[in-house]
Amino acid sequence: LLSTFALVVILYLLLFTHFGNTLAQPFIEQKLNSVLQTPITIETFSLNHNTLALDFHDSLNNTVQIQGKFSLITLTLHAFYQADLSHVGGLNTFHLPIKTSGVLNGGYGTMHVQGSVDIFEGNIQYRTQLSRFYPSDVHISLQKLNYQNLLQWLKYPHHSSTLLNGELDLHGLSRRNIKGDVTLRTHTKNFSPSEIVDDNTSFDFLSLFTDDQGKIQPFRLNITLNASVDELGILEQFAMIPLRGSAKLNTILQGDQDRFVLDAHSTLAKSSTHARVHWKRLRPSYVYMNMEHADANSLFHLFSQSSPIEGSVSMVAESTINQTTANLTVRNGITHPDIFKRVYHLTQPQSRFNTTLAADITPKAIHYRGTFASDLVHLNIDHTTTHEAMLYDLLKAIP
Image 1 (tube, rainbow, N blue to C red):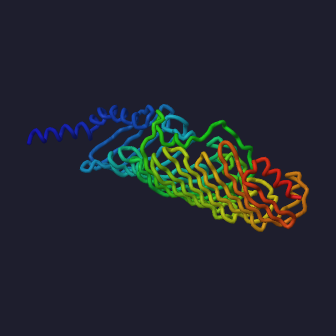
Image 2 (image 1 turned 90 degrees about the vertical axis):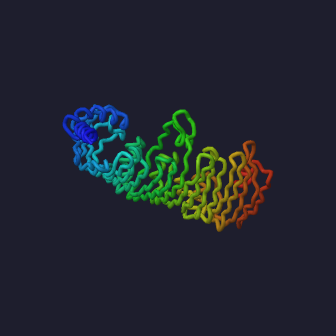
């Protein structure tokens, strides 16, 4: 009994007194250095049987303060925190000044963090669950972020008055079995095109799931993405082509490191579009797209082009990467002679037409077949027609 009592007294002296706090401070500092991956200095560390106060900073004077209640019985914490990360570097890995505050609840095994940060003239509310200080579940709410400021931070030129709203609700991050939902909405009052910048880098999908040695780390994804964009021009710096118009997108990302599938539905160019992409070992193996009843004017406007025709455009394409087939149909088409002359330098009267065109594409050749029927001419395109001959015959058929 005396030994037990002595042990309790020693532990109390080591953990919950000024003397014990002073002895523990270097150990706490070392652990924080390891977790935060930057040198930090503790200014204040005070722990007793029911309260905790911790104040530390990095070499750039970014500061974090934590104060709250500590339970000796359950070894859990309920505390308020605030961080002033005004200097880029050290604790601040975001490369812009940030001030945030919130609440901590839990212990080393499971810690719940909730807070908010004012950023890009908007606000981000966040909740996350940490397992041994690594994120497991994350919920983020984006409220009226200034999209132009966001792209300037990403070093992409952009000019628009666009507000970004959305929610991210992800689970299973620490187990690499990620499930969740992502919703994004944009509202653009005005948009001015910017010069598209080619930074000479290419996006490698594989790199998202590999370690520093390029080895694929096992994972499983089941994520739903819903996006509504009222001005596609705000995405032109990422697409590397000038875009216009609006669209809604519903996407499911599902699979693992061996087989991964993206399945998307969209309203591009007033159409009903379904696209599906398969990856094997994170390399694309199959692509399918079915666009039904797209408006021709909207379709050309999507790529910032004047439409030389009106009508309903449908297309089905299927590719195994080495071989591709595509079928294009235009119904109730009407030509615009002024645009043909101005853009394509072709002089022809206005005509009404219907057309079907199929293409078989391999690495060595492209072959076409189809028909073009108007109130001026009827043309059959033979399956053995080459790419250049098909274009020549089609353009020649337009008086």
